[in-house]
Length: 84
Image (cartoon, helix red, strand yellow):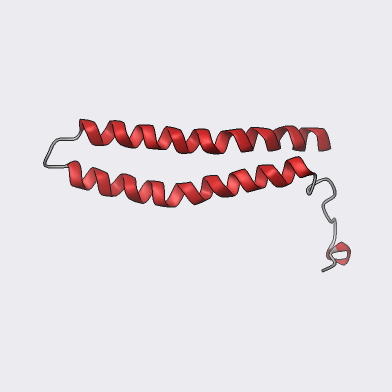
């Protein structure tokens, strides 16, 4: 199971920049195809989408990094196991 967690960590780390690149590509495509009357609205919509999802992708990359490092190998089964 730990090997699967590490493998999926590499998947998440690879997926995050690909998702960001795909979103920028889609944004550029949709904005370039918009008419002059709707271009500002579509630009604003994509700016909001990118503003929200880029931090989500950063978090996905951090999650993958932690998984690759093995920080999820042993998860506590009860609150008694949690120590600070």
